[in-house]
Length: 109
Image 1 (cartoon, rainbow, N blue to C red):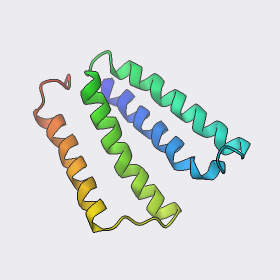
Image 2: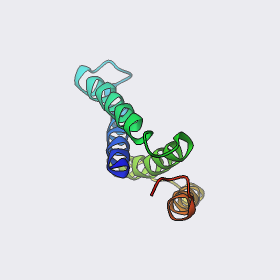
Image 3: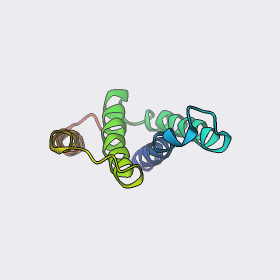
C-alpha cells in the first residue's frame, strides 16, 4: 500500500508543480487553488507512506520521480526542453531511485 500512496503523492505533487506557472504568481484563482490542494493532498499521502518507508528514502523517490515528470510535462506544455546535461542529470536521478528500490533494505518492500 505504501507504494500506491507514494505514487499518489508524486502524481499530486507533479500536478501542483506543473500548474505553478499557470497561477500567474497566484493571481489566478482556479490554478492557485488546484496548486494548493495538490500540495496538501501530496503531503497527506506522504505521511501515509512514512508508516512503512523511512523519510529519507521516501523523499528521495518522491523528489526524484517528481523532477523527471515535471521536466517532461514542462517540455510538452511550456516547450521548456532540457538540454543534454539536464537530461543526463535526470537520468542519474532515475538511476538512483532504481538503485534504492532494487537494493536498499530500507524501502520496506
